[in-house]
Image (cartoon, rainbow, N blue to C red; front, side, top):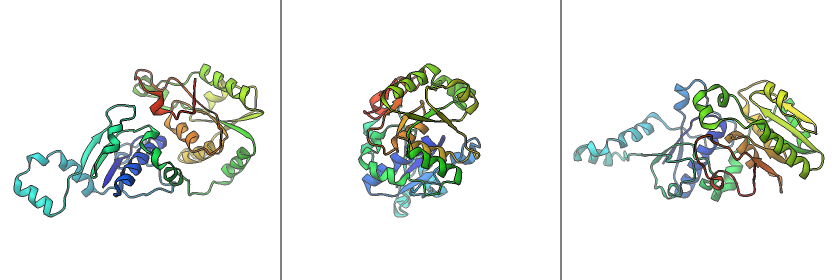
Length: 292
């Protein structure tokens, strides 16, 4: 059994599912999702329900097996024997050691619990088509998003993602990530203008007022604002329909670009993903994406 802990927002949960799915597939074992984090953190919620994934949730007994693994050496031989007879095999917790790709994770055995963010496609590149299929959204779009989605597919559409939210309001998150500045978006827009004929920009943001006041382009921009903030998957679906992408230092728009199917798409990503942490471009960003 592979158990993966889900934390954070939609983009983070997608990375966590993808590594768990890849490891379980490689080992031909069961994948379970630990969503207990969302019982304690009211600011976040489980976001993977709209997808075509394996939604198999870890039980309290499963999680107790993880906790017991900490104390397995303290047990008496008699108790160890009883556990073995009851097939209560401990599940070993594995915590992410650093932000870049860790190749040793690919060699993990069965019965592990993954705790981290795991933000590299190298963890699941070998089952890319499975991941793409399971991250199909099975909930039909509402009329508004259906109309926008149809429009996007008939234009030289370019998604722009402006991530602010807790990147601005939370001091700890701001210190770790910072935000993409206006200069980055101006350079990225200009790059698109020089390479794409008649681009139509679609801007997605958790701070639409700031985006409307600060992001401009010598081409039309449609600002997408969802009426229901809990339907972040609608923005993700629309992003993935766009032909080109300007992403933020955000796992959300990373997935919007990665799931897109346009051959020869231009994806522009920021060179500044973290403010204080050193990171490897080759581990976090696919090789054909442009870094500004």
